[in-house]
Picture 1 (cartoon, rainbow, N blue to C red):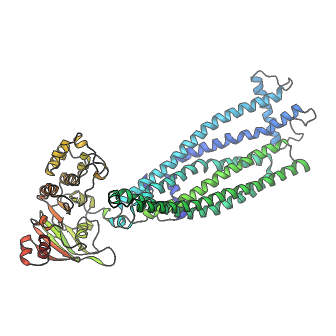
Picture 2 (picture 1 turned 180 degrees about the vertical axis):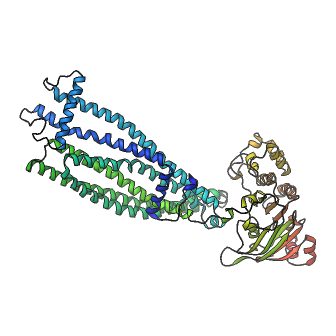
Length: 628
């Protein structure tokens, strides 16, 4: 269902409603069950209120010889007809229980006993209905947010790399975790109240309509008195909630910086500075949360005042009908007061649900901002690519991250099986060229061709099955060494994993570990050294058996011993493959078939190591600077 959650751009409450509608359509049976249980719960909760008037009349008549008879002289109102019907059936039930209605107090006690039985039955059935409502409605709420989380993750994975360079990681984590949690809390609360409480209010209206129709205008008065403050506060809550969530995102980003850079923090004694920044972010969060809480508290206060005003009018109305016009029996007062007094609780819960939903709208707006980001169109279809020889061509490629071009008319043709080294100063465009070849970006002008086919017209899933990358900063998942190697080609055998590990010069080390290939790499490979991590990523690339290989400064951060082992593993990996290598240390690429010198986004020299040295140009100057 998660794939159905993405919606067109929207905003505020309308977006929330559309998402709820999508979820309702996706889980119709669950919603129908919740609504059905809710109707039954409302009925069996409110039905016993109708017993109050017959009980008061009967007990009043039984204890006061001068009191009015059990039933009114004029049996025209609903209350009179219901009291008569209930008394008749109570005597029947009393007869089943062996009680004589003609004995002293017999008929009155039959009514009381029958009311007790009805209350117990309503309690039993109503309790089952409450369980059903809670289970179905809350599961619907949780399922809705779970679908949304899956949709967020799917959409984030479809976004281009440029998106991640423009967003703080803490904000993204906050979107997926905190914002989604706010939505879940809101939906769970709403699921408890939005279905049942309106039905309870309708039940109260039905009872008042049956017993005293003229009292309905009090409800009409009470609704706006309670709803208007709720609506006004809801708008404030939504605005202030958005600022609160932004502050929480800032605090999350601050903590993310602390944890991801803990070695730097410790090494440079930055604990105090980073803590102060985190405390400032939390102070901002607390201040904004306080403003939101004030709006919610004011809503509850004004709603309560509106209810009390309506209740006062009701007391006045009841006094007038009982004492002045004598239109209703005193026993009807309790039947009217009970449902109207419980109406406040139902409205209060709806008010709380509304303000919480308004709080969640800001969280949803932040999530919608991610959904509104355009996915990477590289993942959409394309011509199948079952085999790849490894011929690559850059044809007049231009690219810019902003207004200033990073690549300026780069053209290069590489035969299959060639090792190409890209060299040049920082910012020259080497990594961007590699990104273009991996199709993390598309050219703004020109073409990138593989086996003569424009990459924009090729199925990216097929293309990337034929490529592998080893980067300067190796990344391992927090799973076993076996799994981390097998990610290169899911489904590969243990024998293939070990063969790749041997070629990457890591097998012998793995076998010295107590758990061998089952050893956990740890968070970001924290259980391993840099050289060990790098060789595992090389094994991952080897087991993939790529036609085209990308090496982005794969040995730059290693010591001499690890560099030698890694370089040997890379030599094994490059054999028979088209390879693109970025390296600052020119000594590591002297054996490359073709060296390409890039400066300011242009290729200024190409040739072998010996040819470029003999030419005496930029490459020789860089080489001389590193050897002197």
